Length: 427
Image (cartoon, rainbow, N blue to C red; front, top):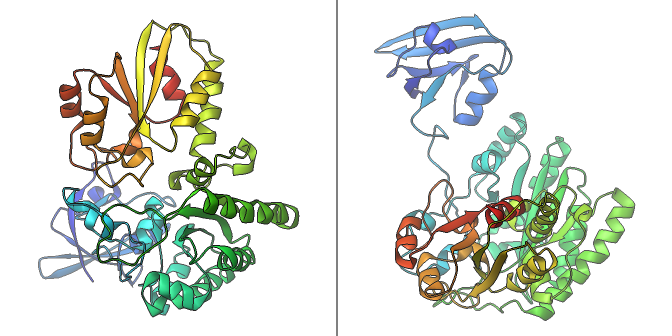
C-alpha cells in the first residue's frame, strides 16, 4: 500500500533526504503502512529503513534519528486512509433523529477506533475484525473510548442492531489481557438496559479494572424527529434517581475493593433527579469530562477558585443563554459567588430545533438563541463554546456566530470553563 506525500515540512529529516511532494511512501522498516497508526508506530524508531517510490523507481533510505523525532512527511488525510463508518443500527442513534437543516457532516456515522485513539471518540468495535483487533494490540493503541451499552450479548446485539455486538466482552478481555486500557460508556435506555441489565454491565466491566478505567452512564437522548424509529421511553427524574442509586452502591463497593469509583453518571442525571453533584475528588481527575461527566462540578470548582482573585469589575449586565436542565444550577452558582457591579441573568432556552426533550446547552442552535434572546436587556450574551463546531464559530443549524451577533445587536461570548466565565464577567 503506497501513500502519496502531499508536503514535506521545512527543516525536517525528509527534506534533508531530498524527499519531495508527489513521492510515495512504500514502507517503513520493511512494513507496509496501512494508515496513520502504522506510520506513527514505525516512524518513531531510531533506526529507520524507508522505501520511497518516485516515478517508476523505488528508493531506499537507511538512517538514524532521535526516538520519536518526526520524519516531516505530510499526507492528504489525517488517517492516511478512508474513515471507517458505523455498521450498526442502534435503536437510540442520535444521527437518525436529526432534523432537516443540520450540517451535512453531522449525518456521517463514524465508528473508527483510530479516531477514538486520536480524538477520544466513542466506538463500538463492531466493525473491528479479529485481525484488526490484533493490530490494535500490536500497536499498543490505548486508551480507547468504547461504547459498551450492555455486556449481555443478546441485549447488546439488540441495542446495536447487529450480531457483532455480542462479542464485546471477548474484545475487551483481549485488550485487558494485552495490558491495554480503555474508557467505556453506556447510553441508558429506560426499561431496556437499566436495572438488572445495568447491574450486570457494571459487574462485568469492573472485573476488567484496572484496564477498564471508567464507565460513564449517559441518559438516552430523544428528539422530536423519531418517525419510524424504535419506540423508546424518555428519561425522567425517577429513572435518573434509580441509575444514580445503582451507581452510588457500586462506587462505594469499588472504591473499597479497587480504589476507584469507576462508575460516573452524567451531569444530566443529577440535574434531572435534582440531586447534588459528587465532590470534586470523586470525579478522579474527570476522565470523561468531554462526555458530560462532571462538567457542572468542575465549572463550579473553577468559578469559585477564580472568584478568590477578586478582580475589579466594570458595572455591566450579562445574560447566559443555556439549556433548560442546567439553568437552576447556574443560577445557584452565580448567587453563591456574586461579583460587585455585575448583574448576570440566566435564561433557559427551549430547544425547538431538536425538540423540548433535548435540554443540554451544547445542542442549542443559533435560531433558538436568536428567537428567545431577542430583547433581553444586557450588554453581552454568554453561552458554552460546546454549542459551536470545534474550531469554527458555527452552530448546529449552520448559523454563524457573527450573523447571530448582528441579529441580536450585541456581542455573544462563547465560554470554555469556569475561569473564563469569571474573567468574561469581570472584563
